[in-house]
Length: 241
Image 1 (cartoon, rainbow, N blue to C red):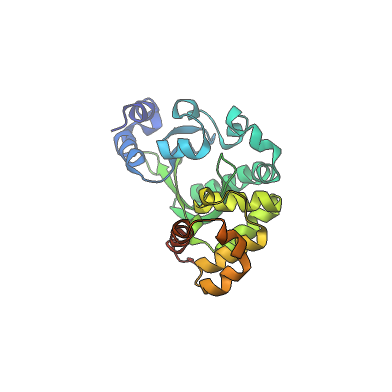
Image 2: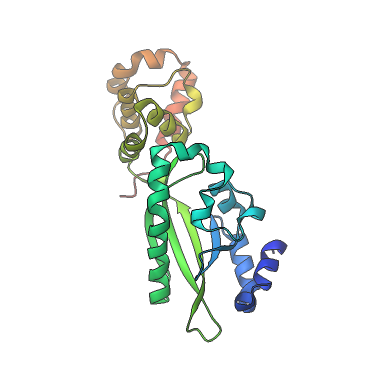
């Protein structure tokens, strides 16, 4: 059991009856997970995966809200990007409505959503919010949130298009390579068109046909690196929709 998480829950009078179960659930979750007060939206506790996702140490998260997270030092550089501005303007309201649905229905609700990491990378995630009820089961006193990364299960051409909405073409390509974990294979960034050909290779296009469009790029790599990169691409999950 996570001792610190249990202590935070046990000291919260409305939650103390469920503190052990919640502590174990949050710690055991392989996905970013946090518990927030249903009225104030303040984070009560979280796991290390959630801490890594928002780029803020666990010890500093308790008491923050989604809005105050934006004011942390870790997000200052990202505040300069169009993507961050969009997220800062839309995310708090979207989450507020999501929480209101849970409070109104007293039911677990799951949605697929677009978000960003503290690194500036785009994240598609499947988020489930579960109400934690009072002893008399009449009031939602807290909301447990778990988010699963489904970015690589999405259509990768759509993901590239999304990057292009918020970044210049070369920055979009760079972020796409990082997302796919193949950025280390390139000593010079591919062009946008070359990036699209690489995605086509991942989707089963003939290597001989596609490589004509990126022959110079292929020749800059060793044969082993080229095939290792293609193997990585082709091991990506199939699009979920």
